[in-house]
Image (tube, rainbow, N blue to C red; front, side, top):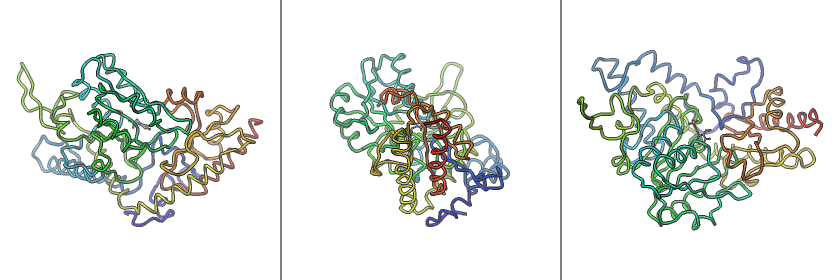
Length: 413
Ligand code: PLP
């Protein structure tokens, strides 16, 4: 059933994996930044597709193939609506956010020259760092980084120093997977456009929190994964402006991305097909689209207020716990931040904290969160992270705080 309005109990009841009977205990699942759970609407859409419409797409003309192709096209249409793209041709299905960024790094990257610059930031997930380092090795492109403030936000004062006349692309996260900080996209876009550079946003941590308006954001590329937004894994989306995609060469070669192949040469299809070599993740795309529609059916303001209030409760509970041994890494206020909260326990390793909290039924993540440069900037090897989704409630937050209190005692902290 589609969630209309916002009723927390109704939302939670839509997630079969969270039913108490499944694991014999109440799950306080606070690892949504890694992967969020799937509601029944998404699971049903996948099962319906696999049991009624399973076939390859854009190839055969029989009934099932037509139905599968229609479902895949409909999924693209839903994702177009979710990001407010100008056309379906701007939606490329990829293997995930990582696949989407690698596509841009390889394909857009091949249009760059040695000495051109790509600007990333110290706040990035490795998915938005490593592909650019690989491009630097391949093509002599220079990678520069915007530093972070002690609060875990992009240091916008540094923009004039980092974004110079050779900058061709600024590729930064929309929301940090460690600090929850939301990027001031308008400031980034203004600085990039002033030197004629393009902007890519890594939307992996933003996409679960409601529809996105790429037109209003004023960016050129937007990348995100399905599994973090209540959809299946193995699929994601790269949105790109059509005039840019049209100029970009393919990333992977294979079936269905061609116009014509002879033994001597290949000519390529128009986007998005040019970028979707081989059999795409069809049922996954159908599931991702169902997830996008499910999210869109929720009262966004109420959902936002719910998560803001839980984030506030968590920040208040954590900060200063254990006689000041617990310290939040990231913004302490609720302005321009999303429900991802990282903290450090002085004298306690994040893996030990996660292990002890797991015994309390609280699922967290500990480590460097694929953001080693950020850990270096903070002078730590890792943090413990709690990331919230719509099905979480005050009980989950309280279980974290009480469980952490007990963990500190066990660790004699
Ligand atoms: N970018 C950010 C900010 C992330 O948090 C993640 C995953 O944690 C990724 C990119 C990579 O996403 P995926 O592993 O789904 O490709």
